[in-house]
Image 1 (spheres, one colour):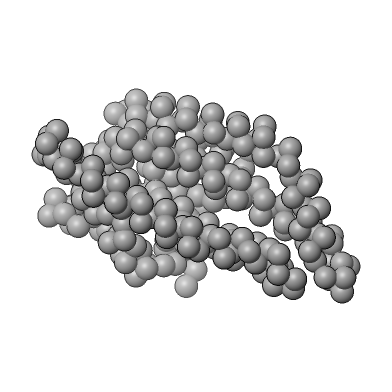
Image 2 (cartoon, helix red, strand yellow; image 1 turned 90 degrees about the vertical axis):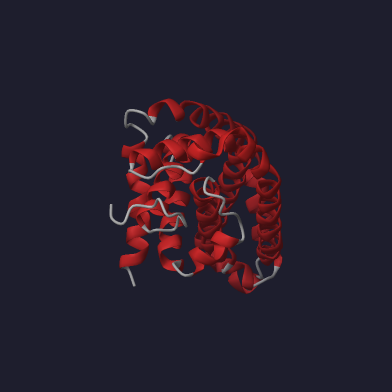
Length: 252
């Protein structure tokens, strides 16, 4: 049971080495810059609201649980940071999406797979815009329908103790969906189709997502979270045979 999450986390770690490879480094700069800008904005604006946010949540905790303040305060603070970095990351990914797709192609090519985009040309690219937008819309709706109820748990006395744990698991799952999108959408596999593939590998996916989530909350390392996670997700897609293509290598 531990093997699958550990393997998923290992793919994320592979991303650190992959973004330094010749032929890949050139595609890292723009996602890196976009990520830096969004995280800097969050640190500047978001953390200024941290105290008020925590005070509000602590005010919703019933009196009989006030003695747990020493535990609840850091849990709520960590949740605030996770939510802030997660939203910043999703926002940055929207802007960086075209460049992340190119990065995923470069990584896939380095791993011995031939990106489908090599054969498609501009006409295939234009035809893919409509389905890609529809896929992205479904992903956003999927996120909102689950994120809003989870956020509401923070104002339910007693239950709000579990909210940080549930949000962490959900954030890990969403990060995997977000990053696996780049290599798979290059092959025409769109959300929610690849969501079914990840459900079959839920522990592997949560392991990767948890590692990506941890990366987003580690100071300084979070600035390189996007390119590292895109590279790691592409490695996972290729080596776990998530790419539905007759060009996928039999072994890696």
